[in-house]
Structure formats: structure tokens, C-alpha cells
Length: 152
Image (cartoon, rainbow, N blue to C red):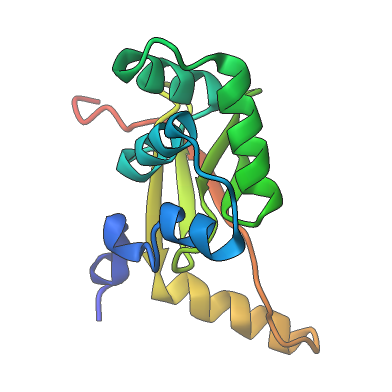
């Protein structure tokens, strides 16, 4: 099998259960603004930071404050519903914590974060851990790059 055929970019199908349903399960109080912020998170195809979440929610309801967004994100993170991501760009970004495993490629020019799964990388990581006498329990892989100019 060719290497390229093993690489898959990820989609929303990776989400196992919605953020709002997990909030209900753990008993998080659902206000109207909190529901809106959660909907914005669920509808996001990227890894938004708090300021981006605020801008998106505020376009829908101008009464949403940045403080409410910060408090909601903190509550969801503390409940294990959101995961905080740091991609060395000074921004804390967030994604649904309960998703199938994936890795990230960060475009250094645009800040775009591309999620991908590569079975060969997964196999190599397990092989390395085993060779060093460990069973791999988890890992986090972040690749940083710049788009290749196809004209040069």
C-alpha cells in the first residue's frame, strides 16, 4: 500500500457524542448564552480560541459577553468536555475532547490547523514504545509547516 493512501484528513464524523449532550449528562447548567456558545463550538470546523468563539457568538446574540465565553470554556474544559490546545502561536485553542484520536498539522503562514490520521505513523509510534519496553497509552503529534509553492 502506498504511503499517501494511508493518510486521511479528519471530519466532523470523528465526534462520538455532542458537547451539549455531554453537558446534560454531567449536570452543567444550560443557560441560553451557554447553549449558544456550545452550538458555535459544535458548528466549528476549526480550532477556535476564546476571542473567535466570542466573535461568532456575538454575531448571533450581541448580549453575549467575552466574560461569559471565558467562563463557559473554563467550565467545559474542567468537565473534560473541551480540550485546550497550544500550537506555539500564543493562542489557546479548543476542540471537543471526546473525539477519535487524530494528529495536527499547523500551517505556520495562515495558522490553519489540519487534522489527520495516518495508520503508518500510529504503527511506528507503537513500535518505538514497544522497542523501548513500553505499551503506548497515548500520544500527541503536532507537525508545523509552510505550504509548498508548486511553481518553484
